[in-house]
Length: 471
Image 1 (cartoon, one colour):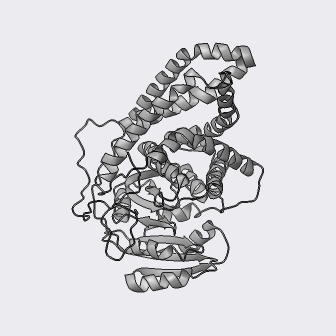
Image 2: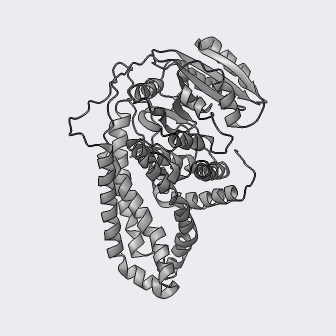
């Protein structure tokens, strides 16, 4: 196994995106979508039912096998407390993982019928003090193989450095159609909405200023939208890690993006209700975006926007082969703040549109499953982690044989996800996986020990109404 940060043959004069070891290369014309195998069509609703049955059977098996654990724990902390603890520590996580795996095994991404769409698209680039990165982002935008009209709106969000000058110098070399705006109000939503007023194309792509695109990214994202039904108003792209070689934090995050986030998006995309069209790289129908009121003034503006779109009865897709590479936090401090923001954004989403008010049953189900995440994070933080310490002293109340079997199951799940990513996403894009074994080991063994407490902090910050912090 290896890392997700991979290479294609870089165009001349571009800095290497992937660090060492570029891939064999190839043009867009030489990289058609993999042919779809002929299979009997299974309706999406039927796939949902099948995945639910599989997950329920797994839940029943887990309850049967863990009965001795339940009886033993109930003698220590009472029966109701024991049931609640095991439900949060084992039954719910097991059910969710089983549902995820069953869904992914049923997922058959339909091929792109039109691989060369010509719809006009505007890329919005909000930037705050991005002079060191903006030239790269614009350069890769200029190398897109998209045959349609691409316009770029750079929104300088109260920068105090040379972001504008560097961008203008790059545009002079690249020949991009770029509009420059200045937005003094701090906040990403203000920058995005300022640009939205200037958009004249039918499609909009939001792109972070520290994110660069694979040469086929825009074409594949627009192609998925162009082939979708009219009620599909957004398509999330796949975001992977660009700076994975910096330290252990970036190495772990690389696997989270490659296996964790991508697999959840695939599952949600299968049920046509991707819950986050992330601001780093996603496409929207311009008209639908304006009808939703643009991006809300929220710490999780992309989450709240997506839930509002779903709340209008619309659908949101995910295109795994429309790939962007972003820079992730390199220090624990910045990583913790980012993930706490994500946790706060989910709470904002619940407040904006309650799951039971989602008009589409599948969107209702998917958003409702997110309600299970905060209590599971609380249980992991306040039961599992102390339980691990207790187990070191021979007290196997919360951590023992029954919880240890999760590790090989986790390895199996990640192996299946890795295989899909390598064959169905990387192969048609001429990307290859590089080694990152230390990052994988750290991701499997320690990542959740960090994520759950950080998320709990984010939930508390949002519920207490504490000041927002982006960096």
